Amino acid sequence: MTYVYILIIILLIILNILLFLAYYRKKQEEKSYKQLKNEIAKSIDLNIKNPVNDFLLHQLNFFIQNLQEKYKSEKNKRRNIFSILDNLSEGVILVSINHDEIIRVDFANSFAKNIFNTEEFVGRTLTEVIDNHNLIELALKSFKINDNVDEDISFYYPEKKYFRCQVKSIGVENYRVIILLDITKEKNLENLRREFLTIMSHEMRTPLSVISGYLETVLNEPNLDEEIYISLKKVEEETSRLTRMFNDLLDIERLEKNIGEEKRFVYFNFSNTIKRAYDFFKIVSDNLFVEFEKQVEEDIYIFGNEDRLLQVVYNILDNSFKFTSLKEKGQKKVWLRLYQSSNEVILEIEDTGIGIPSKEMKKIFNLFYRVDKSRTRQVPGLGIGLYIVKTILESHGARIYLDSEENNGTLFQIIIPTNKNALNRTEKSF
Ligand code: ADP
Image 1 (tube, protein in one colour):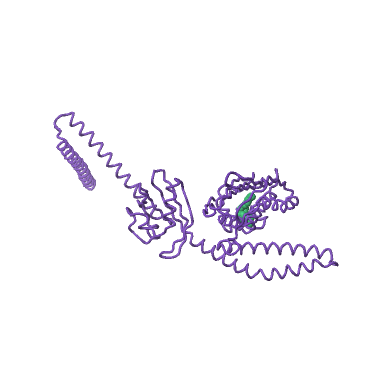
Image 2 (cartoon, protein in one colour):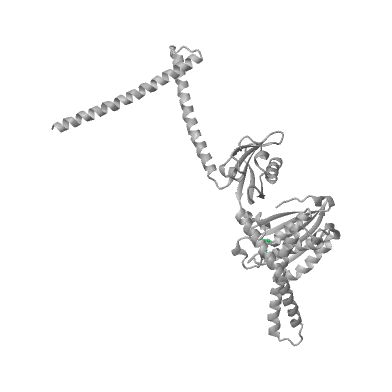
C-alpha cells in the first residue's frame, strides 16, 4: 500500500514540474512578445496603453511571426534545391546578360565548378571563369536569337573532354541556364570506331577490287553454267555493296578534311544532274513497286561540286525507296522536285514511307545513327548516309530541313544559295 502512495506522490511531483515548465515557457514567450511590442511601439512612437494601438501591435506581431515561419520554410526549400543541384552529374550554370552584352554568372553547381577548376563563379563574367570561346559564343547566340541552343563542344583544359552544352531559357528575361553533359566516353568511342573503320576501309579496298576484277572476268565467260552465273552475280552484288560502304567511310575522312577534289566548285546545270538521278532510281522504283514522280524545272544552274551534290540526292533517294518499300500497306510513292525561288534553289525529296519518330529527327544526321535498330534491321546500312549529306551541304552553304510523320512519310527539303558569297556562310539547320 505504501508503494502505491509513493508512486502517486512521484507522479504528482512530475506533473507539477511539467506544468511549471509549460507555464515558464508561456511566460517567456509573453515576455519576448511584450519586449517586441514595446520595441515596435517605441520605434514608431505609439502609445502602448491605448487599446486600439495594442490591438494593432498584436496583429503586427502575428504578421511578423507568420513571415518568419514562411522565411524559414523558403530557406529550407532553397537549401534543398541547392543540394539537389550540387549533387547532379551535369554542370548547371545560371547566367544573365546586361545591356553591354556582358554575361555574368549568378549560380554554378559543384559539377560545373569542377569542370572549370574554379570555386569563384558567382558575380564574375562568363569570359573570366570559362576558358572556352565556343561555349561563350553559344550562350551569346541563345540571347541573340532568343531561343534554346545546343552543341557538342570540346574542352582542352585541364584535360580533353567533350560536353553536350545546352543553353536554355528559364522564363525570366535576360537569364539563361547552361547545362553541361559529359559525353567524353561516347565521343572517344565514336572516334575509336571511326579510326578503326577508316583504317579497315583503306585495307579492304585492294582485296575488294581484286575480287571484283576476277568476278568480272569469270562472269564474262561465255560457257558459264546458269546456276554458277546466278550465284556469282549475288557475290558481285554483295561485293559492290561492301565497296560502296568502304568508299562512304573513306569519303567521311575526305569531306571532313575538305581536301583535294572537294574544293573544286564549278557552275553546272543542276536540273540535268537531278534528271540523271531520276533515271537511275526509276529502275529501282520499278523493281520495288514504288511509284516515282519528278517535277524538275529546266536549266537551273548552281555553283558547287556536282559529284558531291549527286551523292546527296542518291543518299536521300536511296533511303526514301528503302523505307517506303518497307511499308506494309497504303500508298508507296516518292517525289523528286527541283525549283528556283529568288536567290535560292530548292530540292525536295518526299516519300510516303514509314517516317521518322519526332524524337529521333534531330539525331538522324549524326554519324552512325540509325533509328530503332529493330525497325531498320531489314534494311542494310551503317547510319552514315545522312552524315555525309549534312557534311556536303555544309560545305556548299546549303541548309536541309526535315519533316516527317511516323507511318505517313518523310520530306527532306534542301535550300542551296545561288549566290557565290553565300558559300562562305556555313549555316547549320539540323
Ligand atoms: P542508313 O545507312 O542507316 O540508311 P542514314 O544516315 O542514311 O543511314 O539514315 C539514318 C537513319 O535515318 C536511318 O537508319 C533511318 O532510320 C532514318 N531515315 C532516313 N531517311 C528516312 C526515310 N526517308 N524514311 C524513314 N526513315 C529514314
